[in-house]
Each structure stands twice: as C-alpha cells, then as structure tokens.
Image (cartoon, rainbow, N blue to C red; front, top):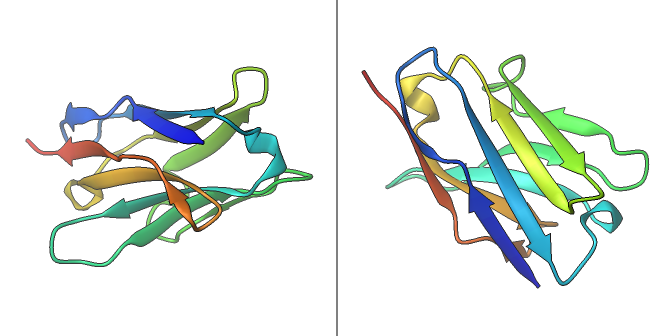
Length: 112
C-alpha cells in the first residue's frame, strides 16, 4: 500500500493549488479517504473526507467553500482543489487511507 502526494508549493494569499494523492496497492473507492494537515507545534487537523460507497464529501469548517475534494476511480487518485488560500492554510498536507495509513505529506505554504 502506498500513497504519494503531489502538487504542493508556495502561493500568495488568494491563490490556488491542487493536491493529488496517487494510491497503489488498493482501490481508493473501497475506502474512506481523508486529507489531514499539520503545522509545527500543533496536532493534526482533519481537512476533508471522501466516503466510500455513495461517495459523500465532508469538510472542516475552516476550509468549507474554499476546498473541494474529488476522486478519480480510473486513475485511483484523490485530489484536493484549494482556492482562496489563506496564510493559516500553511501546513504539511497528508493523504490518509481511513485513519491508519498516511502518505509522506506535502508542504503547502501561503505567503506574500
């Protein structure tokens, strides 16, 4: 099982980034998939979830209306489109299978 995140980087406030998580060794549509972020000195913060089955999506209040989670079953990938980014969105973002298996993380920095 492997999760590899791509698409991070540095952007100015108000900008956009799209994160992608490529999964291998399992089928992401069969599991709940999450994006979680973490900043130094703070605990992990759940950001968004894409449920298995009917595929309901859920968001933390802090990102609702700005972030969109999506899943591409053909590519076996999970994406996170992040718009109107704010400095407080700066964090290491992780793709998580359920609650147990985490990718290596990718840095997102929002700064002017």
